[in-house]
Amino acid sequence: MARIQITLPDAFIFTTELTVRASDLNYGAHVGNDSVLTIMQEARIVLYRTLGFKDEISFEGSTGQIIADAAIQYKSEAFLGDRLTVKIAIDEFTRFGFDMYYLLENTETGKEVARGKTGIVCFDYEKRKIAAIPEILLQKLKQ
Image (cartoon, rainbow, N blue to C red; front, side):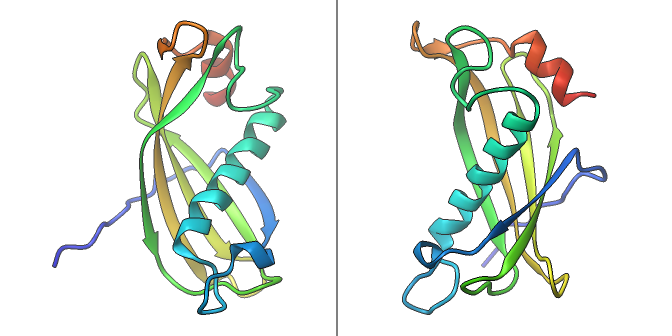
């Protein structure tokens, strides 16, 4: 059976650390597959806040983002209290969005925990339709 393979871009634009919480664990006492998406979202929000945005839904006026697709490649377990270094890269800009890549590593051991990719599409929440990437967002991501 073919497995998802995520090839990461060469350069990361942002790094943050997050701690594995009890709510991130599944019945196997390690980070659940669904929680990896939540960890990726938390890191993405920290990135946007670092860039000066309040959240993911208000980059400029009523334009924010939606997730068009997501992929995760699991590499190793993470446990309660583990510190995860999350690195973010951006690639494949289009008029309406871009791809965001994530590398999750155990901060203490350096072991890779997961790789992820989300397709980001800008979305006008008032008009309820896709929108062009706001220039301010584009400039900050390409710095």
